[in-house]
Image (cartoon, rainbow, N blue to C red):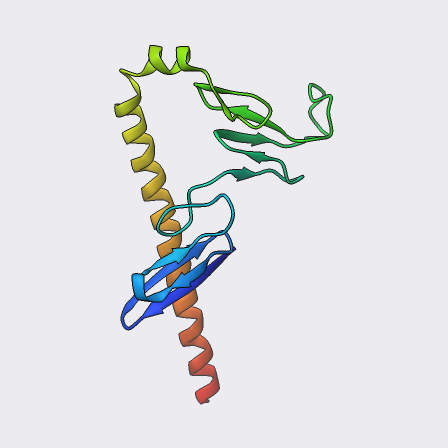
Length: 138
């Protein structure tokens, strides 16, 4: 969930149940989350399992290859373990020359996607609010 924070003409979103830190134009993060808007942190699976350096693979009753009804973490390269907390340095070192460019491209794509989603949500909210104001004036 997120909260909309405002200071004069400046507006931002605080993610993952964080609270607004108005004077510093940032968010106060809860638990394992970090970053200006508390968007950095573990991925929470449907059954509550946290994946720290990977993504969830939730139970799919229509996939016959899944033998467990619990979520599992699918770790990113360079990490292992049930919650992807263990760094495997050999994999990191072998890919270290490729990581900066790949990481930069991935973060750019994610940043653009998240940014455009937030802008779209804000615009929809603003249009809806104007619609409600117009309805209440009639």
